[in-house]
Image 1: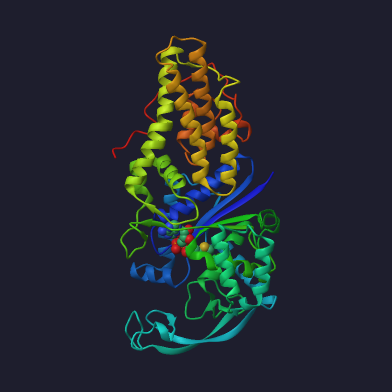
Image 2: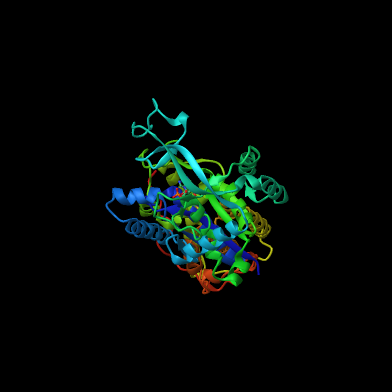
Length: 501
Ligand code: ME8
């Protein structure tokens, strides 16, 4: 059995979840569900990134301790994922003891291997910002944010010898040409590496809210070098050697382009420094834009998943983001676009097929679904569609997978329109076209089940299949001829009520 470990970034608990976070999480969930469907052993993890200055500041602004802030906002992410039927196997919070242990163990390994040294960081510091600036950042010699005098500060810090990994990283990229996709992102990462890497400061002494440096407890790790290690924590690094050997490095990281440098440059180097394999693959997607801009607090354009679920349902939500966004480039979200896609694909195409078949089976076949034809003209298309769907999920292209599955839905609707069984006398011809349509519904429900977590099971129920769809396994479940016929077909409320444009 193949193993598949898939991750989302762990989200900052300074703010509430929005549709950008949900985009990565729903995609990872659908990919995890696809792999379960083909029988792989899957570990799918998401979670929250809870240390660092950003979270500490948010806590102060909300009158909370950092831990209270983290508890409150981590729970909000967890609730959002429950709402969206996210099927994660684990939920990592970086404040958990298991994570502290893993960070300390991995960093200690890098330290023992000689890749971490102590040095002095000197720079222009704004105490109000708790951040260093360069000369170029200053406005009239003052802090650009607070317009206050800046101080020359020097801090003892630990540095990661990133510069020493340039050649190894270039080699790793050439030995693993598909490790970072799409290719444009791979080129971007290679560009950063070849442009010259400098050692990086990985600890902070002015901050308390973090994981303690095991060999010098005056310091905590800078939040990014704690956060990245979550992927190893979950796999059992530092606590469960057998689990780690099982899940590492078959890991697939999904992430937005904003955090490419950390994941595609620093993280593989850190793995090498600690003596573990770099991650198997990193899939980088673009931004979801709202009115042309990335969602942010300051742009007032954040949309909460719950608002859209209220209008389109969980399936409508998931289907939209998986079908409409291509994983890679930036994509614009609009409510109008979501409505149009929902009406076209779900209400009209799939919903209509189910409703029509239910009505005509009731009318012409006494409510008992006939079997499909072995030599149905739709059978070769079903085989072709299965191949296309499987290939698309394999390269994390949910939009192409769903597009392919809908070719079968459209073909079944077209076959019904041509045969017009509602006008014909009951008999073998009517049975044949309805049996084929029922078989298409059975197969499409399975192929779309990573996206349509609820409607897929409901379709199976309505066409009389007793087995829960969660037990279906591919490729068997996609083979033409699986619908046995002779089953009660029940009618019900529209699966996807049409929405007003
Ligand atoms: O960066 N479009 O957390 P974060 C698409 N804690 N995806 C978006 C998006 C948008 N407009 N906005 C956010 C962090 N995302 C770190 C990660 S991982 C070891 C540490 C998604 O809360 C996208 O996946 O800022 C992006 O990379 C991530 O949320 C950033 O989440």
